[in-house]
Length: 331
Ligand code: GA4
Image (cartoon, rainbow, N blue to C red; front, side, top):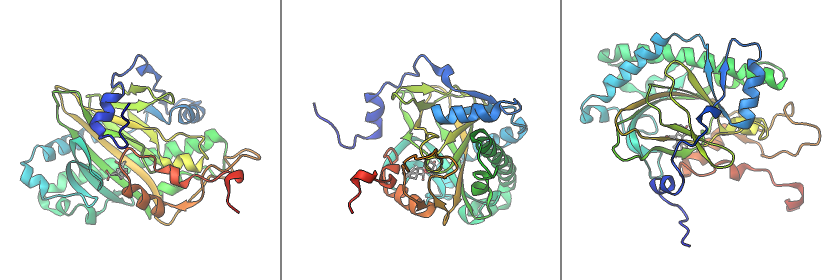
């Protein structure tokens, strides 16, 4: 058998079944106003690293406004969109994902967030008077979704029974927190293909909202892919690599991907909550049981980011930060 060392992403999706599988109902749904929400979130983070939240208190109007503004941007002439790119890594991008040759069937806008609004430096075009309503829809949405991320992170600490309650949330709401916002547009694609190749998110938490066109799939522990049926009124939360490290592997950074739709455009908006660049990331003693072996060595978020941008999208970025077991250590 010929084994491809580094198969292109389109081939990976052909090798593995891209069928949604029989169990799309495995996606846990957490009602944030339920009294058992904290425990249910912890269970979902341990088993899947992924869940949907309802009753989140964010008005649909905020999401609708941003979806409309994004739609207006993506329907501009190509040359005009390209004035807002190429991504460095921020700005407009078309098909190319990251700096190492990954290709997807999408176009997108990537922004840096400073505190709770878009960083002007990452999106000069938004300063133009004609972009005023786009900018305000972005900032209103980001402020709301960042609060939601922080609330969910506090429920995680509560569910784990660790103190202080803001042990995770403070990492993403610091003035220096490294947060990213992404607007994706997946045009219809007649052949079922990969819109965004499989990967894990490097940050602590990601909060995704999409229009009514499905396509997001997540990998179960046994390697099967399952669909996360779209729900424009809810948010999907996924655990990132840094949270997997902070919880010493207890929470799972979930592999996910997006498949295209043959008929309709998928639009998604994703908030990525990361810590300040200089923040040290290591398994938290509060989360570890007595005598539990540390799975990862300490690193700074800046170090991890640099390593992440050197690899292809689908690669296992955490492997190089795994702690060696006592027995393997060269003394
Ligand atoms: C995945 C999660 C976010 O979309 C993102 C992506 C980033 C990019 O598109 O520029 C990365 C990717 C993501 C992981 C590894 C690196 C960086 C492309 C890539 C190959 C914005 C992020 O922070 O990491």
